[in-house]
Length: 296
Ligand SMILES: Nc1ncnc2c1ncn2[C@@H]1O[C@H](COP(=O)(O)OP(=O)(O)OP(=O)(O)O)[C@@H](O)[C@H]1O
Ligand SMILES: [Mg+2]
Image (tube, rainbow, N blue to C red; front, top):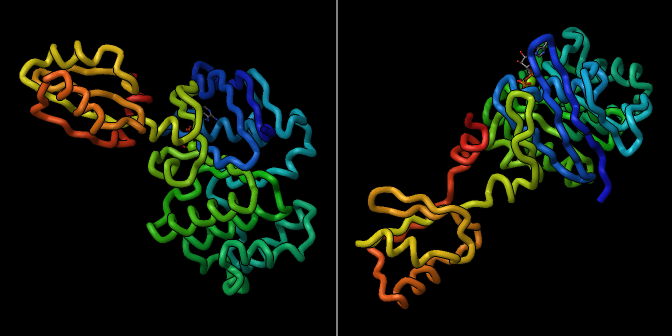
């Protein structure tokens, strides 16, 4: 697999504040890579360093296996904060300004406007755009120069459900076209819906990194109960697919792999003449897992 971005012990300290405290990230080509963490966990600071806007206090990063050279920046389109456009210029004219700065052929402007569904509104002054349209104009601006990677910081912040859906569709389309996406978000649901990979960070530290399937979806729970709880837990010794077992007063909660076969478990007990009074499987709520990951 081809790495698009690698960071090694990347750090940013603001005086006593360890905003980013030694991050090791690896983003493969074609991934939709989510950096997930609560407010203040260091997401924007991290992206700032990767884009050459914030100077790291320590550690290293490399784009495209080519270090930190300026030429890499041309291959990375970014949406970092609420973008400032010239309100009295049209969407199209604003992109002409950006194209000039980036050294991009203005013939690309219509192409990127079409990709964000703004072609029909391109002659309107940007000040008449809705928040969602402004966000799409910003995405169009990030697309100018046809970058290999899009870096997006909280791209759905402040948008209504329709605007959120549009941006998420946009990300999926861009990914389908082969672009690598790096997305910072504090919204678990968003990462779960659009990302293939995720790193979970808190207070500048990496808590976990992997595929969304492994990290956020990989666990189910099965509750079992019987007259004799201890007989149950003894019988389960060595049973495959159980990651962790939790006893409450009258129940056992099994944390199991996603492929866990509840019916087979039931048969296993009845073969042993143990009769379950309770058997409930449930999908672990993502929120729960996220909170568990980011708990003190
Ligand atoms: N220029 C700065 N000077 C001092 N502290 C800063 C500066 N920039 C960020 N910080 C601090 O670094 C920490 C990480 O901030 P950052 O903006 O990277 O977090 P974030 O994960 O993007 O948060 P949010 O979800 O709110 O956008 C915070 O404690 C923040 O107050
Ligand atoms: Mg931020």
